Image 1 (cartoon, each protein chain N blue to C red):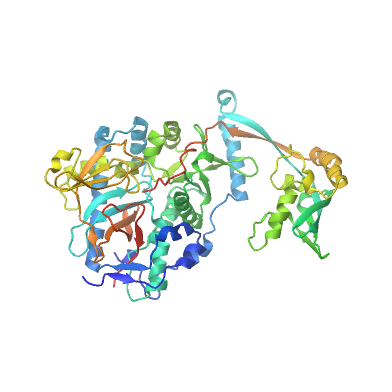
Image 2: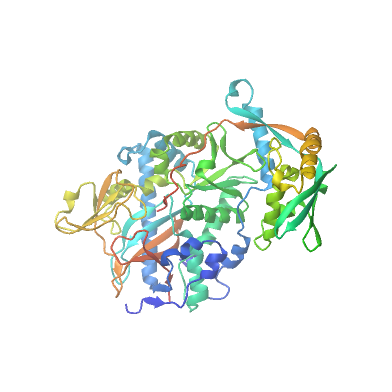
Length: 198
Length: 388
């Protein structure tokens, strides 16, 4: 009985506020992705081959290994365009250099741009533009897809990235074959309009 | 007892917003009022919870021993899962008994057990706690250790299963309140070291021979050891039988651990409640029957074996005329009839129904829902309690 009571006396109540601060929850992190990859490898090892031929579907993941220095320019208020994308050797050295309307300059990493920050709506706007450029391939967009002309400031900047830029990035990309377990999904897809709690 | 109803000057909007449960602020569901409970009343409710859970467990063991599940009208694969999940001691994460009476001398009567996908979890735990600590602020206590008990639950689950980096998918069919409940459990598990993710059921990949997966942003697939579902087992049985077959294979091969476990569906079924009510002559059980004729001359209630949110309920008077009824989506399930139970009614003619949560079958939290009608359904208000 005593254990269940939430006493309004100092020292006897647990601090839920502190839990609230920790309760960000959600989202697989990279560590789990790694475990997943290892898991799939093990599944392949143990279940793959002759008898499991129909249990998997193979997919090739293509990831850039080179990095990009991307120059972004604010042309009107909150209207950003890519003026240049230059390939560099190391993906981790990628940067976004933004020139604002007032001529001030900011530099971001890809991770910084990817973070959703309600107090910084500029990043969200930039993210949308960058996704249409070569940098988008480093932010989760499949490398098979083309670039978006509207993300670029000019035909020259677009053509440079869309021809030689893409070609070089593609030739140095890492290709990994993953085996997706043959599976079912889509259960309950028409049943979201009411609560099923009790 | 006079003065049970307390006017509070506000509701804890800040913490509700801060923790992102803003749906609770809609439709005046949370109101600045509370209810006083006396300690003997609390103890009596807890006694009822303990005794009833013990009876349910004993009777489930009896069904498993004798393989007498026929009256529950469940698919064979579900019966396999019920037996396996109980025999493998899969833990019953959380359930909620709904009780009538228990206040001002009214007898405590079990209305139903929401053993599978109980709702009211965020408001009963941290919102009620905030009412108590930040608004009521008097020297008193509250029967509420729900969030802490869930943390202990996931801590022990992780230890007992010897998983170094346990992973959990929380899922629902996507309705905001259900998704919020799944996320609540997910957040608790995350604090105890689980790798977690939320996904609507339709986006989860079920591989019949391998396990449960989500596709990551990078295009590869990550597997989850555990799944907490705000999706009723009976939905899986009757609306998605193919999913039942897949889960049958996955659970029986220990490729995923599902919460609440399959055996919670037995506890959830009104047919099971009807069964135990007849078998055990116990003051907390209402008289129950499969036939309305057994209630000739007295008030009674018609329910369905798997109803939700107060839907598909009819209350009849002594002359078998309908006093109150609710529509719903569950009218196709088996009918069960219960003796009418008296809810506590305040001076404003509002009715109160107690929800008593348990974690691993142990009492953890009490809270009330209030309505100006006899059937406490989705339109009810949430009322916190305080124990002077």
